[in-house]
Image (cartoon, rainbow, N blue to C red):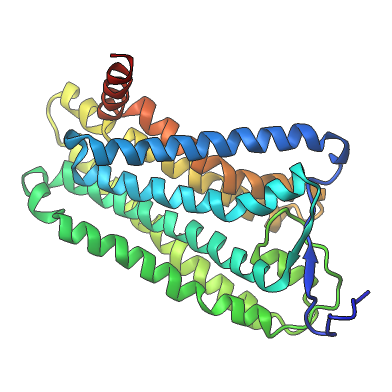
Length: 314
């Protein structure tokens, strides 16, 4: 049913939903989301603060890590307003234009994360395969250009999405299936010709996730070949150990994406709660895990944390 301000083509507001079948447990769900947000925001801000304050971390690897932390903050803050409104205050409405803006930023930060992980794999490739050229290849200016390139690529490829959605009529209702706005979710309530949206969406996914993941695999194939050529087993393990944090971050990001794709492709009859939970894992787990992974697996990050804690106690 359309309100007085609605048109047959665009509703003034859309209705967000929580997690199907867990209406009575929204208080616990809200608590879990608040904990996830706190870990993500505090963890990524801590990484950024460490990289800025510690001269020992002024190296290419940690500049890329700070990009990842900044992007993870973007992912968290792009979903935070509507998720907290839905679960903490039971406010489920969002303006149509505001929904398009949120959709744009959620997808942009997600695609940027893929590009940053690719840049980090290039950093590990140069560090292990061309160690003597590491400082000359990854200069500060080149790192800045890479970061701006990742931003520009994501922005340009996703810029048409809000306009492609805005042209569609919406007559299948106003209820979305998540507590935030996603392009596939909006396509479910659109009743016009969505072939252009689907084809362009597939192109963007292949152009970003597909190409980025292929080059990440290629870089690690070359890294593995270089490591196996090292005579000393101790040196081989040491070289591989420098990649473990990045490998864990790549798995934390791509495994949920693959799982969501597999469920949509092969388990179309899955209960709605499965789709919602997998989307939540895809958006909330990587920003939370990345600072934990790098804090646990990277000696320099741990040393910086202990140094700051020691100063605060003194």
